[in-house]
Image (cartoon, rainbow, N blue to C red; front, side, top):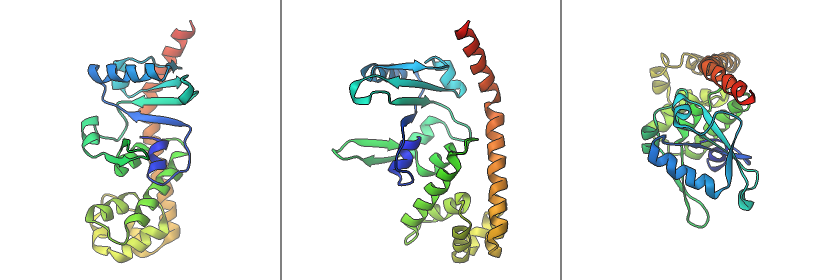
Length: 227
């Protein structure tokens, strides 16, 4: 659900860690513990690896010591802001086959884009690249779902203007959902760029607000651990 997924979708070249969205029930967490044991992985920082923290929306962080994954960081989450529950994510997942025949399940591209809408600087250029890559991969034969997704999530003014020119009807139908599309219809790249920045900052603010109580809980855990 993180950088590795972005690599596999063609929007990044490298990621130093691996992030997983998981189902936080007893049986699945038991399987995860066995996998982490195989990786000789231990928790770093806080919170501890407990169901209540995962269900609250925290990420639990691990460092692997197995020779084949030495120093690899693994982060797991069960709940994310603005993203559906695991069962819905799983139904929409993208499964790709890696070299050697191994199947790998990724968050669907729309779900990955939603999960990336955080307060972190590095996530916003990645969102732009993810949607751009999807646009160029599918623009020759787009489905209605593709077009709707691009109008909802493209962050490249030139591409939004181009898309609006090709499909004005769908663009107008989404104006209430995303008012900045009015600038795409007008072909005004400068106003569209400014509106995209305002949209980004509003999303960052919502993410900071979401994490306030979670950060307070982490600070409490750090003080307890230090004491």
